[in-house]
Image (tube, rainbow, N blue to C red):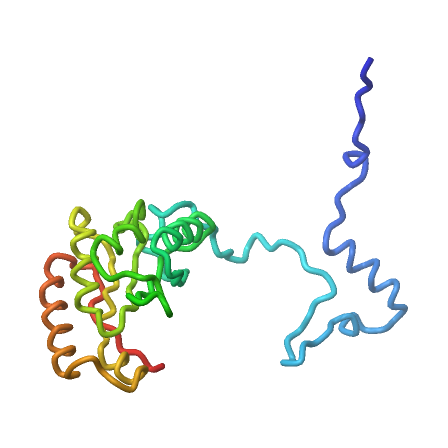
Length: 212
């Protein structure tokens, strides 16, 4: 025999913020209510009680990739695991858990990024990622033009993909302090890659000017 358990909560009224404040002021015994307000080290007020405010706009949770196209913000996750297959798994985990886009750091040696040295390597790292829905940005250093060509081929069936080629050989030179070949040649290759892909991917970000 089972016995139904009756909840007691419906028998009690739900107190309002005004009810709580009235009791708090009673307990203060004449002291101003403001004495309950704390301050952070930066001087920001910490209220003694917070309640839901239906009038205040709340940052919406991601309803899914299809709803992110016109959002005014981005939540981008860095993917730099050296193994392309593991990097791919981490990319999918990030997108599943709320990331809106990916920053893929590439390094053929695998020392500072995903070991991508060919289009096939990049394809393994991005396997199953819908490039027209989940923007992919590249951080490829001096191999930026070549990596941009690989990414463009992988996104061939998605001309509206908001790719971020991030062609930026000058920042690569500033970061490394050296160049595997004339810097002018890298700049020229980046310019040619940008011109090549601008028409095919009108929503893409071609170049990057980094202040790092």
